[in-house]
Image (cartoon, rainbow, N blue to C red; front, side, top):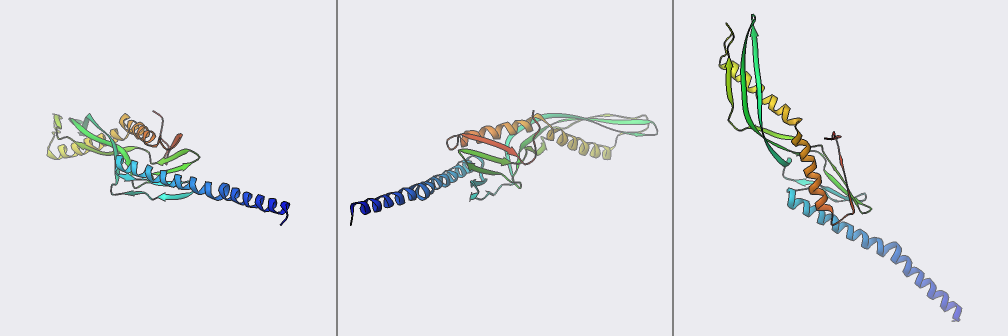
Length: 212
């Protein structure tokens, strides 16, 4: 075998090995590391939030969304609420002034998609907009009646007034500042958890969230 032929064969072998390393081995190892990182991310989130979001590496689903919960509460807030119920009859108005304290939880509805995509050293997080998950009376409701001239407050009025009071407290909670605080809290936690794995975290909401 001539020297030139041996050199040509050696070059072909080297080129084949180099091509394998560049086209197969390195991408395989990178993908393996990405998949392992995705699993570690899922485990870290599960430990903190007790659920696992859908996690993708590029377009490949590594982990499906898994949860035994229906809601992810990240913030609790107590607030005092006041409401005035009134009813008029033949020009006579009766009123019930109501006040009481509520305990609200703000967070995320896990029936909706919560996913993380790892791509190009970035984590793209998609989650539902924060909302008031629950608003419960703490049982300290106080009433003050104001009777009409011939239109007096009765037990049915108290019931209607209480129901209206609770509905109004829930409406207030849905627009309260602490719902926005839940957004800031989840973003802070996610960025802290994902920082060891990516250079940047991009967070988007399935329903646009108004800036606060």
